[in-house]
Image (cartoon, rainbow, N blue to C red; front, side, top):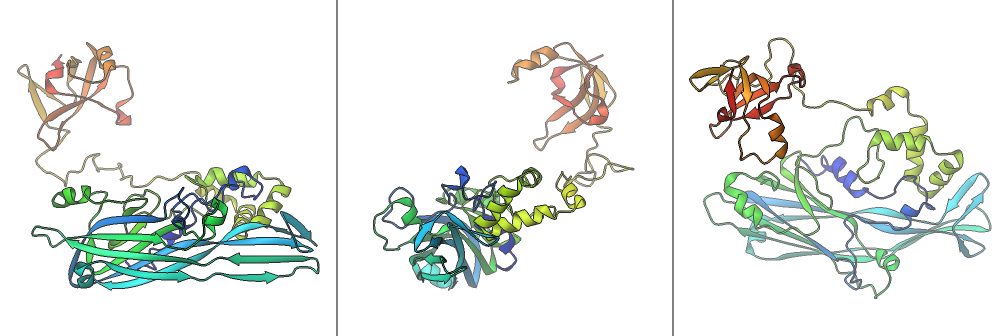
Length: 417
């Protein structure tokens, strides 16, 4: 999977927490910004200036690593009336607000794996500052300023012992900007915000850090990740190293109509809350940031059928209609919970058998003692991966068996009736 194909997920990471509901500059929660993946200049000692990702990769002899660093750069938007900065002002029907926007930045590097195995590789980069100005009226000027910053990508690979041909890949992203010692607001002007890396190896594949194969588990445990979390994206040849913890193969829900930026967002709740904003609050949100304006406009014009899609969906549920059993008969044809049985006190116990429960003393849940002596109906006899038998039962007077909610006991914990 190419880096471009991974962009949708990476963009969600890039703008996570960028602006929080109710999307107004005056909201208290939007006064202290930029929480995720912030790499400050080294002179600001209260927050880190680098992040480290270590992960395993299985390259070939002629593999190349394509590494893309992505982050936001602060762009301060100042509204000046007669040369004096103000929080906001009206020019005709348009409100102008002082606010810190952000500009997307990307740094690309392509490195041969043979060079990475030979030692440390450093890729320095700089991002220019600059300013833009517009004048909506003779008295009002809007000035956008960005400050320069400098950084380094430090990359190396170390071959692992053993027959698998894997290597430990180490990537450090460091902010080496020469900003003077200052407060947080000033330091953010030279910071990399929501910094993350997307990398691909060709030819070759990465090893999952979430669910590694058995041979790689020890090596994965020895990997060191600081302020990043690498996950597979799309296929095993592409990795997103994120400042937010994700599972392998993250994706954007098809039901999501667009970005909302809010941490742990629930689209339906935020959409309904945004709909409930007053006209004055929506006006202020639109004036705060163009991205906030797009959220408000999208919500205001959202058709009912699109809102209905946000209410919920079911994923990964196999059909249980017709002849399809609730277990997978193709996985192991030697077992069948509907017909398998176990001999208890000389009596065959199988689906439909009546039993009395005798929970063992080794059970950790103290509430099991309330089941002592209760009568139940066996719904299945199950085998686990270790070859142990478990009797699945429904207790008389408990949930209907059609719900599929069973309680599980060993053969020694049931007495045939």
